[in-house]
Length: 287
View (tube, helix red, strand yellow):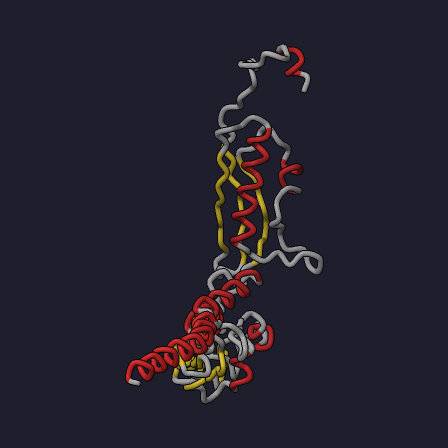
């Protein structure tokens, strides 16, 4: 009797193991499924606006790489100082939680000292505005953009500073005089006629109302490269191009002189081909 009872117990354990085995294997092999995506720490940015940047979806398979990319996308929006992502495993699936620390928003944006360029035009130079996240990098980029805008308008001595006070950003501008080109001269050129050089450069003297003639350092720098390349193309490999500026007493007008040092001109004496076994020198020289 005892022996029969023992056999029945063994049989019951084996049956139970056989029934439970496939279910256990199925659970172990089942994909990790996201059952919920939580957003915490946000006070200014709506949950919907945050989830737009998140690819971890309810019902999708949980992937650490996807969560990592979600975190990076949220940081790139510039609205958050930090983003932390955690995952919690439950018997139903995985809960993904993003904890964000928001940057303060720009409440006020001011410009002072801008007499020659309107506030609206300066705002267009910025990559942020009111109610955008307060981002130190974008604020500094805005300062440089405002300076560049003024310099293209002839304000070579403009000075721009910025003050950030809690949620207010204020750009202070000292324009200085607007500088115009009174005359453009060339000195040292013997190989090229002056007229040819004049039509190669971007900078022209003021000819109202057709040419504003504002002083623009970037254009001058490009002209120097253009003129040197012109000489190099004619064999003046050591050519140098410099610039001289002569200001008027009030610093509002200048005479710009491109100083050219042509130096020695090089010519091709002989062309030698080596290593060719199929074509001779005459055939190669014709190509």
